[in-house]
Image 1 (cartoon, rainbow, N blue to C red):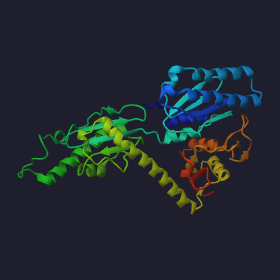
Image 2 (image 1 turned 90 degrees about the vertical axis):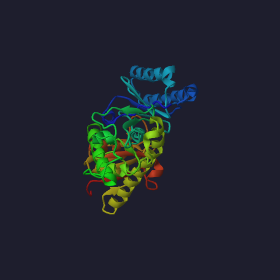
Image 3 (image 1 turned 180 degrees about the vertical axis):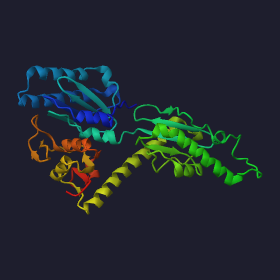
Image 4 (image 1 turned 135 degrees about the vertical axis):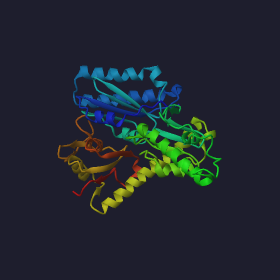
Length: 371
């Protein structure tokens, strides 16, 4: 079982704003099998030494250094903590605070020291969290299931959700309509299924409104097509589970949903790259760090994809002018800083693998207007 705690977008923005005399960001691979955590704990010790050496090179205050070291060593020695891990771990520490995030996605080991956190590796976990809803819909039953990367699925209680198509119509069945009624046979069934779907959609609206969490529909036609034709849920994705969900357990629905989520995320990246290629022909896209930095300073970035493993040390002024520098506590990752500034001005930021980006690029930015 994976134990995951991914930051929300609002938490991420709070972390972006942190400034400290020393902000240490450590990322390392871990294992969900607690009995095999020794290698991760040894690696954490080595990464901590690397971070402390960077602080020593800047002649950082020894008392503050010792306090920060104590924070991280306490984590390293906490047996219970290492029994509940996922595939990677982020540790964000200052002499005053320490935050940890367990991630379902893999990361490369890293120890970064600056006056701000290095957060790019978290962006992929935020964008592709493996968290979704499944609407199990049939004539006979309806249930909304929330699925997670790290926990069993949970059925969400939804006020006003019809229990079945027949109940929504106030009938014993929708399959035995007589000819002497206003609605009869196949035409009448379609009419009642459409009314049923509208009631389901109306009940879900207060729960799903304003959320971009993916919604996967598990339903057979014709009900699946009817619901898609009138659904208002913003997160409803195109691919669904076409079989009737009546005989599938919540756990089985969650299992079938995971490859659908993976395909949805891949399509999301592909669509972003297609948009980038289109806007490049209009002069409204770039893969150049300096150009993107100036755009971020003006709030001109609409969409930004960044390689979560790329690292370019340096500094960036308020106008987006960059200065490349050696790695160390006196600098920070320019791509990470760019991502933070883009998020702060309302851009959508996606952390991706380098293989997802145009050849040789560490980022791909789509601009709101031509600079």
